[in-house]
Image (cartoon, rainbow, N blue to C red; front, side, top):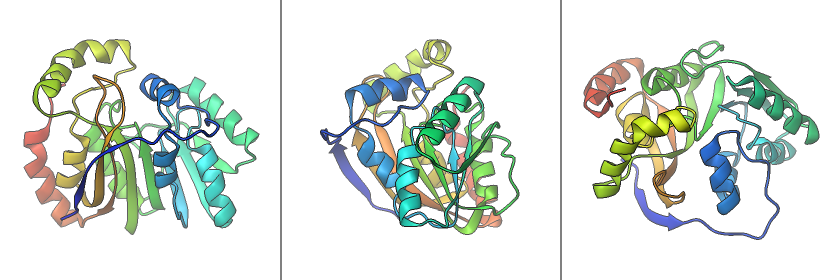
Length: 239
């Protein structure tokens, strides 16, 4: 079982801000908080073939560029379904002289072969995908058996704040690009096709889109996945 660390305040460091993601929530948070620590976490010590799932307008590009400087043999891919954000991500990559293969596609139907990636990165992706369970299955399919899934996601809170998120989500989805405030993405990862290696709860974000979690997970076998996904049905939200 992974150890869940205590909540951690986000550090406010006086450094230049990288371009923010096209996701409205992430753009607002980036203006108020320094997300660089957490994006560095996602891009730390990468090797092999990498997928940036839900690239937005290229928020991960500066950190992937740093990773390439450390490991020039990295092969980078990115996926973004929104044409405007995809265009912005290509411009950001060009500005950083980063060689990354960016294409259109959805997390629920990844345009890649089985066992393609050594690491899949998701930053504020699973709050907006239409079917998070299918998306997790797709990530499991394309990541290598010895690969890794790294994530930074806002999730449902406990107590009264969680109840408020439940009530607000139907309206919030309409005004914020389909974003769900009350998804238990961390629970779904743990109960579904991955085993959590580490996870940390962050006092990051502004109500009602908080807290955030970040962590790493490794794929479990297909047999174990079938059993765990069946047990995860109780976590599923009404859509």
